[in-house]
Length: 282
Figure 1 (cartoon, rainbow, N blue to C red):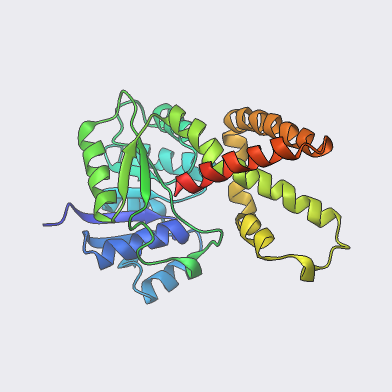
Figure 2: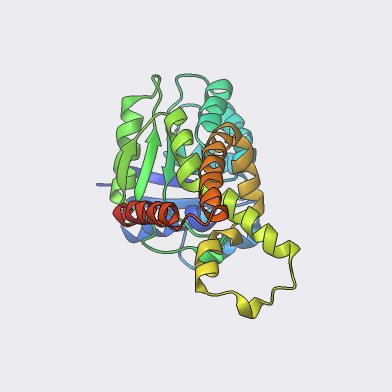
């Protein structure tokens, strides 16, 4: 028996499209309905079997489905929250944004404290974007963080947990504030640093591309990510990112000092310590 008859996904990019295709392949839902601001994206998703059908207006999708997943940029979510309030305020819904506090605050402000919403953040994806880069099984054995608040409906929480579990994910809970603090370090800061590193190369173009090796390319892969998306993430989670940049600057100055002083013993000890930390992460 299906948990939901119809699940709607607004935003058919890498995350949204990959959710759609897995919902269908794993037979988690009877019908998957999609919406994108681009008609050609919806037509391609339908043609390739990613969705069962689409609506040209998000209002029609919100009215028709049992459960809704918002896979849109953070800066347009409030428009969909307003539609939900006006059309189907009791709908069960979640999002997939990598910043949670602002999203939860917007839902509370626009729809109210008793909405059937809980935030989600699947820790998966790609530096690539768009429907051409969706991937079947993207969430298999991956972490998904859900962010209940003190007002979260327990039925909603259990249904969302079950949805992600059925997609193959391991589900963890934390508050929106805890989430944003942690992922400012594990995700947002690395992107911030990589963009800064690439800017050095951009300003020193005399270094031929033939001189860049796999280490540089592996380190900077995420620098190919969507600039619009990451501009919003940086700004919406600014406080937490700046908290971690201060800690990074402190460590950077320390190891820089070892180098300036030709202190081989301290430099090697430092590198050995952080190497072990990196190995233990896996």
